[in-house]
Image (cartoon, one colour):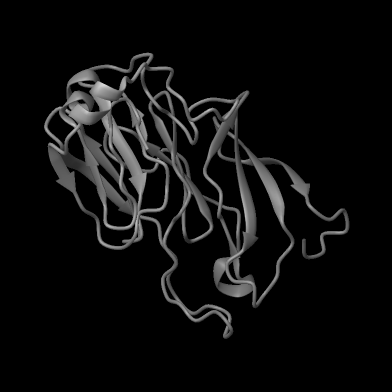
Length: 221
């Protein structure tokens, strides 16, 4: 996958070419990749030309590894890289010097339904950056609105999925549209099916403003 000159490898970590740190140093610009699949049409295409010769010349300049697998789309905004990881944290990395600016634990803790044989489910969805806020779907079922500069909570985290009692999970990335953030809820494990749904939150307050249920009667689906 290529994001503004970034060569991304999932499973063991991520790596970026020099061009990414150079192009994205400084304030936000048109080349930022601020939410999953880049744009509202879901093109996953930054519209940058890339010739075969340029592709052959790409190389790994620096590598950054987080504990656990990395599942989410990497997000680039305002000179920083944001991603969730199997280590249970959301990370912010400054691209000019490629050092971690902050991290915040957003994984579940405590007992899970007996049929789910795992511990501390980690986040899998990509964050979304809107202005100075980073919206993160946590592995603990909460949606977080964090200060992009330091990772502190700007809003009180909003509980969307009941991971520990019902086995619900936020599998989707945060999707921004018209002043709202959308996130999907499904089963953490198929041994315990839950009512599938899409939840809308107000970006300014973090409050839930609407829910679309896959089944009108709120049954599993």
